[in-house]
Image (cartoon, rainbow, N blue to C red; front, side):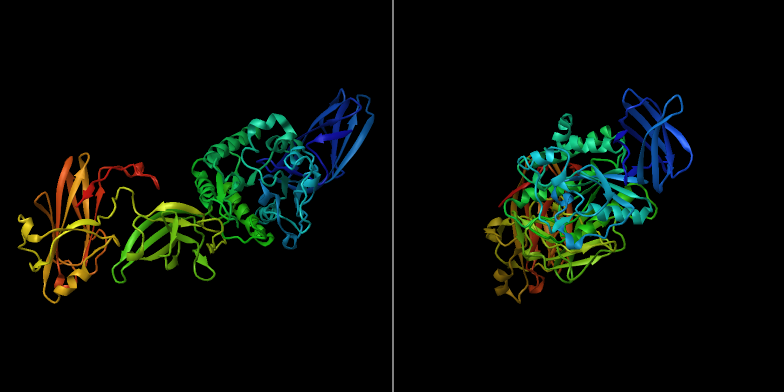
Length: 616
């Protein structure tokens, strides 16, 4: 008698929802008859049939746990016993597929390997069950030909001091969390991309990665609890636009082929790499992975950007153990385990603010699913303000407050239209976690504010210093433009249109100055004129007064005053008068915002919104 699939010594059998075994096994035999099983020297029960050299059986009813000693034998119709075979040390628990590339295969230093635990087993790549001990991807002994084919025709070699991946730590943490024996089916191969894992290649069996994974799945009874995945580095190429589509296709195929449409899947958002090339493509894969849980149900993405390396691209053996625990915690959430905690941390919202007392621009980044509070060892690091594909040095401080990170920027040095990133570039230093040792996700580009704001107006006609009008209560529309001596002025250091050096020579006398602009609207628009100012201010559009703040004073900050305006198609005139505030006023901010465009039309980095064009 020879068992081909479904039952092996030292294996972990996948439990049912009733916490009982129900594993199908097949094999070859030399006699016809009834297949009987005796478990732990107990009573004998019929479990299958033997006919024409083949046997088929189902081992059902074993309670979760173990170990079990199982003895199979054939009994013919005359009651004679044939072909006994024994399987020792069998457990019933949860079994997991481990897939992906080298960080799942395990390249961390072995000195950090977890101490083996008897109730965490691995189905090694030579089709053998044993206690899980790194490296569990013994790829040089792999049965499936694809692992040799991908390495030029011979099994790939691994340095003897490496081999730690997240799998063993994942299994041990699942055992600690659930008390259930754990089995790990090793399927990963370093350097592979989504094209290598294409489900369309499954007909090749062990000559394709997907086919090899499916063969190992069926070899162990055809039932698993879920999938754990680390892969994406090799997809950071010009074909990155296909990553999300390929991942969705693969998960759908797994769920179909595994017979579980709600199969839980937990993946790692790839960490960093000390390399050269286009970090934009690397960050793009991370961003696609970040939002995959919005597109795939019963799916979690675990960040890893804060973890250390043992070489230029592989997570250290020490931090692979941390990653394994994070993956287990996320999987427990998907499976609704007791006391599982919260899903991985996700970006919730980004809002912009202004500190009146300090003149700082603030960006408040809120996260959901924070366990406890956000924290860091040393000053919080990892956020970047990026403008024109370059990191701006304007971010001088990050504060952590419960589930928020508050970025502080000097307004005058902040780019006009920056984007916010966490984990920008190949190998950023990121050290922010929550109380559960779970990292923030890599994200970006995320624009500050909303895309229906136009750029700040920095190209004006500016008048000479005019006689004071106090708080501007009695100031009327300036019909005589010649007396104001308007001159073109481009404020290259904007967005604040700063006149204080020009006007300082007029101090201590009070005075006023006009800013004028031509505004073209290519279609009818519902707008807001958003002003910032540090003195009394009055504004006219097409000769009609639309705003007046007689008490305007320091400091000036964007959008201090907002003026609704329903603009017709065509050209318009905008004039703003600013009182000198007894020498304290320096200038203005001004921009338009559309009020009649739904915010769901806007995506980071893409302008869908038509806005007014200003020409002095």
